[in-house]
Image (cartoon, rainbow, N blue to C red; front, top):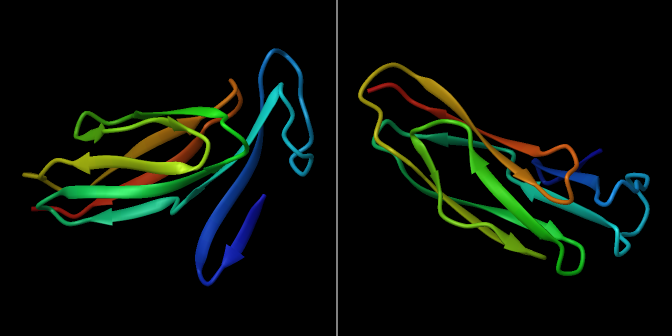
Amino acid sequence: MGIRYVGAALLLLSMTACGESSSPMSPASSSSCSFGVTPLAQSAPASGGTYTASVMSTGSCPWTATAQAPWIAVASGGAGTATLSYSVQPNAAGARQGIVEISAGGGTPVRLTVDQAPK
């Protein structure tokens, strides 16, 4: 479910673990994790750089982040509410798009899209 805060998207999802599920609006229990990520999109110049996203999670729910493109490197994962750090390598060719997937509890990952400008 998307919630709008001053133009920034905040995606709240209910994640499941141990085969149990909960509705997207239910409070987290010991068997599920609810978390959100903002921003869900990042524009990067051709020169690349280091970026962050906020991960807001219930309790101390552990989460992981995985880059789905070889030119994006994830510098951190975490638990609970924390900052996700990632870097984008310089681009020597045309425009490109990559994804960083953030997941917790074995549920559907949240996708952060990175669009990088061409050289």
